[in-house]
Image (cartoon, rainbow, N blue to C red):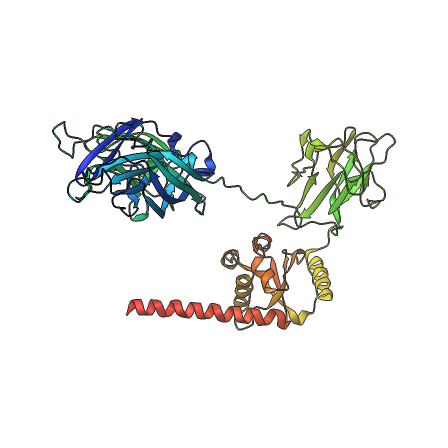
Length: 585
């Protein structure tokens, strides 16, 4: 319960206390409205049956009414109609806007009688809670109340005011990291306004970030209080980690500058990221606040180590599977599929489980990928099943729910699979149990492997269009890893090859390991595709001793926009250089 105080022409009117519908923390239970701002459109059409405030023996009593509208406790939001002289039935037809408020702000309307000499008289007031105008607008005739909180009366009945009020939600950019401050109350404030009945103050609180004036917000003014209770929350605009919060409690004055009642600063480490709730020392008085910080959850990118291995990779791998039931051995290749469909799988490369009575293995149940590690003599292997232990589900072309896939009794990770080591026991469905084992494999010499891979690459690509760069050192690898996009990567490679003047018009990038075996192939035939390409996919494949190959393109549809892009980039660099030279001068 609060009291409404009116300051007009040097005197103060206190209106009776009444309950305001301030939601918890002023933001209510709907998190969607936290920090949201609104624009209030106000139409004050007219009033009826006002009381006579000016006595006249000849014409009878009349008034000179005007109306003030504003947010409760926020005098700086007030808007005012014109004064209509000598009437008890004014028609203002006033249109106005309160440019900004927040969810929970109440709106007050005060009908006043203008007096040339002395203070203006209150003819009646009414107040609207925010939920009366949002989400549905208000269009109604309301009863006015007098200074004692009773229904205001005119000669012919109750005093009324005709209003149309609506709230429009303002657009806002939601930040990743958000800070909400609830100013709860203050106690023991000093008296800044002297009066015969005892000194009081009209306190309000300003919350801001030092050096960021755009972050400031302020509470309502609580008139004639030394222990104000606001329970008001708002968001710190453009809040960043490291921002301290400054709290200043001031005494509102109509004519003079507002007096400072106390202030304090809360360091960022005291509330970020776990929040804060408690008292703050103002020097003279205590302020109670609650601060909550929401920090975005950083989801780490899950990288599949075998992402580069696909269905076309069929080279023999130094592993095989041995059935625990029959002793059957199946040799693995780089990409081996397991299932029961003879039509979908390729015999003898894929493992076909077609034993009589199998009904818990899907047509395409699982995949095993094998590939060489950084050391060409070391191989990696992973088992994939996108349904994990919950069953393979319906496979392409039909099928039914299978019994899932496990490694040593543990479910297979659906997104990145499970790593395999010799001796692991793999279960497909319910009964198919196989042991993952190492198999002997005759390897070519490193020189022969390099020669074969180079010959294969040359047969597929025109050597005159290719530019190769073997990464010789950590410094070169570091320079490549810092490239933010496709064009930057191409330009760094060309500079490392001492060909900086070569236009970076490249439509294909190929990565190879230490022995010249292709690791990845990336194509982007247009500038738009190159700008959108996730260059991290390429950088993950680069290692010291490996090779990155560029395929130059003379396609004018790619060359022209790239040259235009480079020209704009060089102009931007020239402008920056010129600005820095001017600053130095």
